[in-house]
Length: 145
Image (cartoon, rainbow, N blue to C red; front, side, top):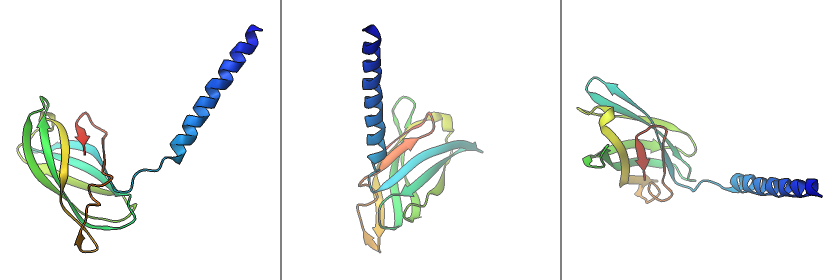
């Protein structure tokens, strides 16, 4: 009877894996803006950071400007700055680059999207840029939203 116990355990494990996969397929990303920190390159004496921004909402964003805080590797605040992502159409990824003068990329430990300084939809102020904001990073430099 020992072989049947292993088969039962295998079937139970397969059922759990199948249920987890089904839940992952059903999960839809929240409507809002997805910001991915994609690259950081030293250009002269400036760090050029590259984002991929995707508006996952139902409405095009006319203009999105994010207040961003840069932290050093020890967690100390280096600076606050505004990054203007411009217009973000629905479900169309946009690449945006920003240069941080007199800063080596290796000095940056993480970035925090502190909020939206400007967010306009149909010519009016909106909270769409911060509601459902999803932040991620492909780098050792973290990104929080």
